[in-house]
Length: 273
Image 1 (tube, rainbow, N blue to C red):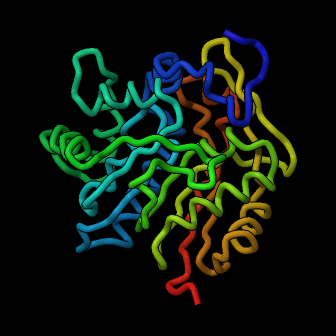
Image 2 (cartoon, rainbow, N blue to C red):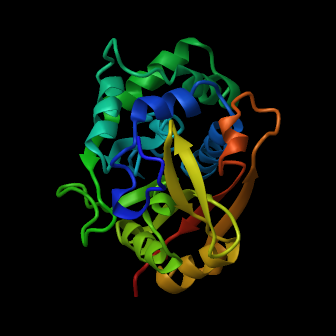
């Protein structure tokens, strides 16, 4: 494993999905709860009565759990991931392989705690995700950043800790966000869970002994990107700061960059005229 920071297009070449799951998903922590809460709140407040959504998780990684709140409203779930290793681990979960990862704790949190349903619904929710989800390849640095046949348009696109790891500058980040927004339907929604920090700074975080560089985005920079680069209107953008619970059992949350994040909700204009 390299001890040098890795960033940009090669950021995941040394990424070990099993170590990542072990270190960051060994227990349910606020880094998971915060976006899960926001996703639950978003879908229940915007899509009651809908069951036809096309949902894309861009840079989904090896974890298949943040789709839990999407299922009651979705017709299609697309998991787009850059590395073959991450897709392989996600496929083990989708195939319910004996040697696959276990994300039951995250589904329990959504189904039982947030939705107030019984334990019997947890397995049903996981089965529904398996039935609806499809894996494909993505690369944000390509002109068409997703595998052919999955270009959209989507009702909702979600991305978490993906663009801020892949991109090395705010300019590059803005270009990446504009590519995602182009895959939305008019009136569609872009949701992002992003490392928040002082403009122009970076964080270094670890998976095992391998170091990764992540670009910090300030709240002002995020508004500027969404308005000037992507054409979202200010009143259709919500930025929600997310702070880690200092009592989290997982020390990784506080050792690394994960104590300050922001959850971004932006709606594309209803018309492109």
